[in-house]
Image 1: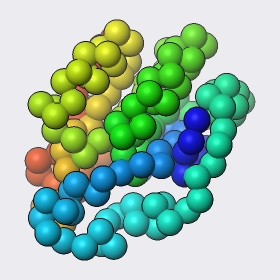
Image 2: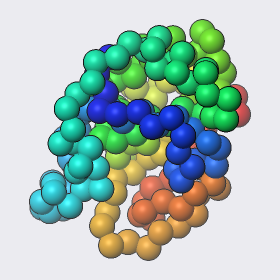
Image 3: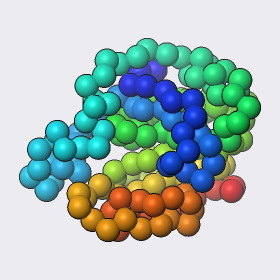
Length: 161
């Protein structure tokens, strides 16, 4: 699968210590809809990184070797824009672990109903919905246990937590 990067331990995007996987694709819809330049995107530097080819098994083995992580965070660029690879990763991960999988997406629920339906077959999936809107008041999300950047963003549990 193609990714941009992996961070073995992140503490700021979920209430549990997580491995963050940065996915390689994005339409930058958050900014283009507002007629803003994409270079102000919080993930702009990630977008400039070269793609990395890595198997889901390698990522999973790396995750399992780390004794302090309790979740996987799939994030920006935009995991839903690499949905086949994301679904394959989740499928393989669920064969060895039922730990939380958190998906940070800039899509709204109604834009990805078909993908949500497919993800609903798995337990312990959390999706953070909503586009990033610059210069907004942050707010605390109870499910994620962290502050989100825009008031239109929220998390939803798909099953089992």
